[in-house]
Each structure stands twice: as C-alpha cells, then as structure tokens.
Length: 163
Image 1 (cartoon, one colour):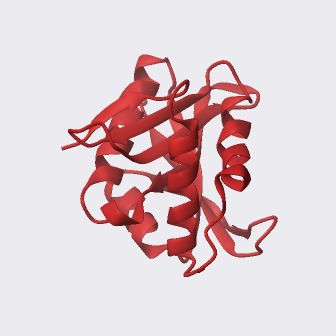
Image 2 (image 1 turned 120 degrees about the vertical axis):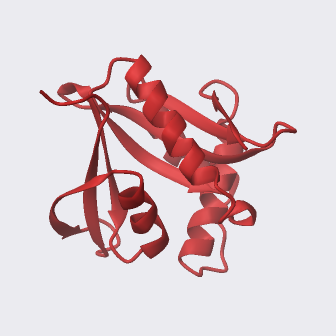
Image 3 (image 1 turned 90 degrees about the horizontal axis):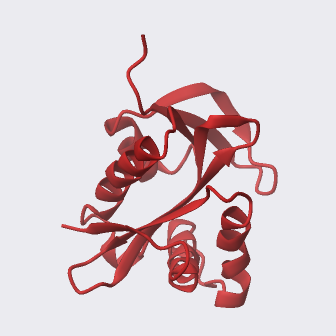
C-alpha cells in the first residue's frame, strides 16, 4: 500500500531521479539522465501554473517510488493534464502506478477538475493497459511525438459523472 501526498514543494529532485531511471528503463537506454538534465522536465510543469501538482506515491517508510506531474490544460480550467507519470523501475509491478493514478483522480476532483488527459507512447504496452484498465478512454488517433517521432495516443479520464 502506498501513501499519496502532494510533494510539489519538497520532492522535485526525487521525482526527477525517478523520471530519469524510468524513462531509461522503458526505452532500454543504458544512459540515465543526470539530475541536472531531468529536473527541468518536472520543474517546467510545476512552474506552468499555480494549480500545478506533484503527486507522490510513498512506501510506508516515506520513500518516494512514483509520481505524477500535473497542471491545468491551457484555456481549459476544468481539465488537468498529466504531463509525466513515472514509477521507479525497482517498484514496477507492485501497484504504485495504479494507486497513484487513483490518488491523482481524487486530488483532481477535490481541486474542482472535471476531467484529466494524458498522452502515452502507443508502444508502451504496460502503461496503455494500465490506463485503459483504470477507465482512461482514447481520444482520436495516435500522432507522432514532436521530438521522438514515436506514435502517441491521448487519453481522457472523466472525474465527475456526465449528465
């Protein structure tokens, strides 16, 4: 069981390390980004809005093992965008991502958001299966990522019942 906290002020470096390790493992890349390379990825989201949120999944001993960096979508105050979700590779398959996503949904509801969106590489089967299992629904067709060219699929999660 993981505790979900708001780590916006205190966990930026730890989440940047998780992000660097997770993306390297996902992409089978032996070169893990340094903290100085990874920190701006997370900070950019947090600096984008006063409503930005860094949700953290911690173990019982307080170790951060997963995170989500979230900010409102520009021009859509009721829609949050999950820019980054990362799980430390040592904790893959242990439920941290599912618990974190449930906690993020609850935090976003509390903050008045109606829905959340994210984009995921279409070939990231583990993530795609997780999002779909947790009720995220595809939006449109995959499009090439602006930097990598890999196909990305957008997803949306309704946070409130629709009329």
